Length: 118
Image (cartoon, rainbow, N blue to C red; front, side, top):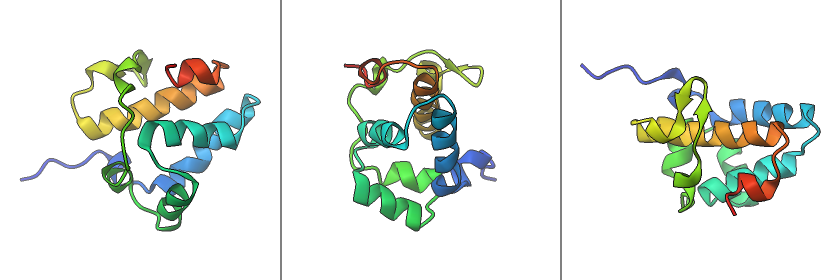
């Protein structure tokens, strides 16, 4: 019997995306910055991201179809939701947590340069 997938895997990315933006905007950051983070992490651009949102793909599909995961993701470290992102064994969960972590850093006022591991 296949293990039940974590709920986040099957949630549509489009349903969570506004929450990322809301979290950032509450702290005086912008949708453009959230998008920049998503583009950096996944390799999507504006039109391909919009297509994923329009198609309401789930997180699993969103990351499966991502053009190119950033080669610097290993520089994303720290704790999110009680887990050290660098120690998460499930690849998909780790990618989701990377995104959570980056948006979190944005909301906490980190500079884009630091967030994008430059």
